Length: 309
Image (cartoon, rainbow, N blue to C red):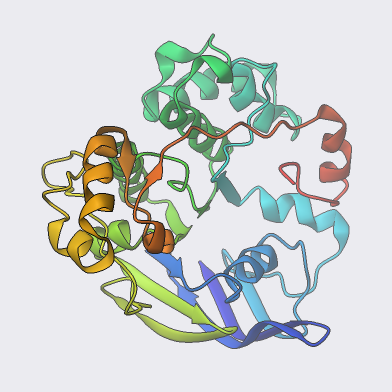
């Protein structure tokens, strides 16, 4: 489904990818992991034809897309659905209209839109929210809208860029269960994430990038452990937030008794962030949505910038 053969992309003196070779088969569920700046974004942008490789070969759904004309870009992007961390919904459009917009920009027939949109909303579990606006939805519901919009044009591949990054742990696992259901139906899923808990729990294929190089490609855990990292305290089988008692060993190692006491009072509405383990805990806050504008449509259809940029 996605093939990178010895792909290299540099930005002046900076490295995006170096001699990357990856074969992702149809129906695979793959986590793309690595430190910030490792090359994950470059990997995605190459698939979406936002940038060109310096060398190597890229194949998507059997078609060589290494170097194509601008007029071919919209057809390529129809094969790929994108799900974002910050949802990127149109604030002044309803749930139905947000999902329909993904078909309207491709000039799909109204009858096809009327049939397809309710089906996809039902698939992601928010058919009853069709007339709601984004600010009337929870963060998890907004992400379901984002997934529905990504699926509405029947893509071969679903690329998810940190789709759980703005969600609480329980909602994050609900979204992961939804993505797994979509994958079982035949859609290839490529998910960029820093969520070690999720990767370890799901035990799927993991492609790890570091300094632009593919350093690991196998089923298993997230990797990239550091001595100062705290193993997150999300207990997925029980589907609940961790308590301080669950995290006692980690807290004892990284905080004094006073910090642990303060954390105990706040733990009902917080979760542990492994990337900021030094500060121990972080309050969860729903993100603000990022609006799109209709004037981006023409550039998308002409093979210009992606409509979600």
